[in-house]
Every structure is written in structure tokens, then in C-alpha cells.
Amino acid sequence: MPDFTQKTRDHIVKVDTGSGVLIRPSSGIGTYILTAKHVIETEPNSGVYRAVEDIVVTTYAGNIVPVQQVKISTRADLAILICEQKLTTYLTPAISQLERGNKTLFYGYPIQRRGGNEDDRLREYEGEVTASTSDKFTLRLVGEPEHGEIV
Image 1 (spheres, rainbow, N blue to C red):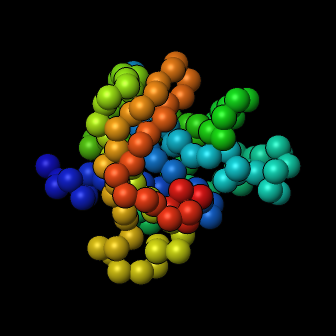
Image 2: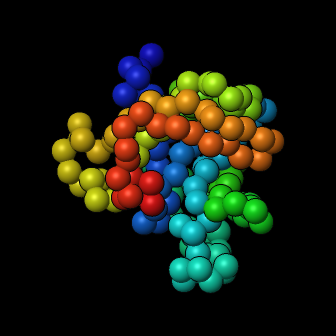
């Protein structure tokens, strides 16, 4: 069983020049990659997205993830990339909705630190869910992530 740091790294991916997170759906079939839809736009604010075969997803370990489908949210800056393979046994299944008061962790893997010291590539922020609906949630974070942590 890997340690917590390794489990966290198992969830992190690069999506082209942006970032994303691997999630195993509750069905246990395949793997989802959650990212911001602006990451896969052809031009900033264009609303036009790259074709599935032009999107490059790379794990923290440097492996390429084959993407078969893309789902784009019409209401939020969210894209779900679907890989039909089950990538790793250590991914946490997505089984429940966040509720107000739940404790959570937020991780940043910004482009400006990807080539640096391995111990400084990830930043962790503790947080609490302050609001939750069926399609979005709001977090209050302890500490203040820099703009680059979130973008």
C-alpha cells in the first residue's frame, strides 16, 4: 500500500499545459479525468475545444493516458475526460457528494513548479465545504493559494 504522498501523486495529471485529477467512477469501470474546460480550448475564451485525439494527458509518473471521450459542462468551467481503462488500483472512488461542513484537502500542481524539487511540486491546503448543491460546491481554505495554484 503506498503512502499518502504517493496516493496523492497517483491522482494528479497534466492535461496539455494545465492540470487535472484522476477519479474512478463509483461503477469502478474506467477512469475519469476532471479538468477545467478552458484547459482544452483551442484559443482562450473561444468555446471551441480540441478533438479527443489532440488532448494529451500525462500522469505524475510520466505515463500517457488514452482519452476516448470528452464531456464539457455547459454551466461551469469543467470538462470530464473519459479513459475506458482502469488506470490504478489506488484511485479513490467517487461515491458521494460533498456536504456543508465536510473537511477536505485542495492540491495545487501548477506549471511553474512541475520541473522543480519533487518535494515542492505539490501544495496542500486544508479546507471545509461552505456550500454544496447537486452540481457545485464552495470551499474555504486554510492559507491562501497563489493565483498560479488555482489557474
